[in-house]
Structure formats: C-alpha cells, structure tokens
Image (cartoon, helix red, strand yellow):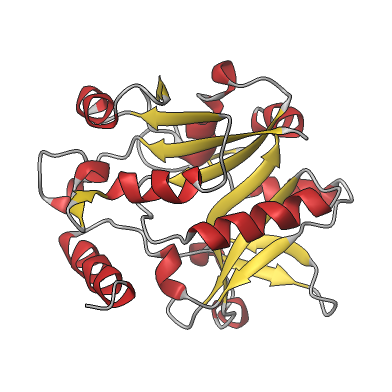
Amino acid sequence: MRKLAVVVLAAGQGKRMRSKLPKVLHPLGGRPMIQHVLDAADALNPSRLVIVVGQGAQQVRAALGSNATFVEQTRRMGTGHAVMQAQAALDDSYDVLVLYGDMPLLRPATLKSLYDRFREGNSPLAMLIVSDNQSRGFGRVIRDPMGRVKAVVEEAECTPDQLAIRDLNAGVYCFKAEWLWGQLFQLPLHPGKGEAGEYFLTDLVGMAVAQGFEVPYLITQDASEALGINTPEHLAEAEAVLDRRLGG
C-alpha cells in the first residue's frame, strides 16, 4: 500500500482577522484552528505531515511542535505555488492529501471516505465537492449529464448559468505524488495579487480531465465542513458549528 502524506497550507497572512496572531493559530474551541485540521488528518494515520508556513512561521512552528515537517512559502503566489514548496519533503511514493489550515471543520470520516474513493480508482487525483446554495466565493464544479467532472470554473469567471450550480469546489484533493509534481510546474500563471501572479491548484482538475482521466469525487451535504476562516465573523460562525456538534 502506498504511503499517505498530508500537506496543510498554512501560509496565509490573515489580514482580515485584524490581529497580529497568525490566522491558523486563532483559537477555536479552545485550541488553534489548525489543530482541528491536524486532528482530522491524523485519523487517516498518515506517514508524513508537511505544513506550508509563511506569515508568522516561527509562531506556527512553536505552537505545533516537532511532529511535522515545515516548509516555507516566502512569496505568496497562490495555492499551486504553496504545494510546490512541499515537493522537496516528499518523493513519488506518496499519496498526497492537501488540506487548509484555516478550514477546521472537516470531519475525519469525510477525509477517510475521500481517500478511500481515491484509492479505488486509477485517477491521479480525487476531489471534495460541497453542495450548498451559499457559494462563499468557491469555484463551481462542472459535471456532464453522467455526473463526471469536466472542469472547475472560478466564481469570478462563471456565466450566470454556472453561478446557479450548487456543486462547489472545496479545494481538498488527493493526488498521486508522481503526477502532482510533474503537473504543478505546468500550471499557468494567472494575474493576481501582487505583480508576480498566482498558480491555482484548481487548474489541475482540468488538466487531469484533458489527459483522459475520470476524476473521482465525494460530495458532502454538510456545508460547514468547507467553512474557511478569514474574518472574526467566520470564526464565530465556526464556534457555533462546533458547539452544535458537541451538543452545546
């Protein structure tokens, strides 16, 4: 059986949190929000944990201890660029699960089901889809009449018909490392924040489809699982969800 590596993207500045504390260290349920992500991932018994840090890197390292490999994203050039930083820590023998340090409400059972679906198929990637009427800025997952994934369209580029699609890209993926490392460096550079532009991990979906792969996916109906924390209001919303889950 192939080894599993979990890569957690945790380099965001979190300016909208209005705090000097690194975003992923903001407390949720009495613990740093990223710890909830790590706990969910730990249920899959990964062989390696790689955390991509940036803003407040030293604080994040100190808070999380020595059970992870830390790599630094010194330039903010998008999600694809962030995952590129993990290549030096992982060889081609791994399956790679990509998560976000500011998405703390993913359930371990959801991640396990996604990984199981990935291992059952021959595709180099699998993706998590969230079904929700509230888009939260997520890209839309375009599927054909047979239900097969054809593309992911970023919200800003959607047609009015595409904006009505309820299948949202949660940004959580499983990859075969040997395919991932080869394709990451083929990603197109998009105009984006700053002068350098950005590499989007979402482009890998269309690349796999263009190569003839059928992309397996898991749909979660629990939209809270894909809640990303970008503001104090989002954090309060996550606290309420966590409280309900714990029966509070």
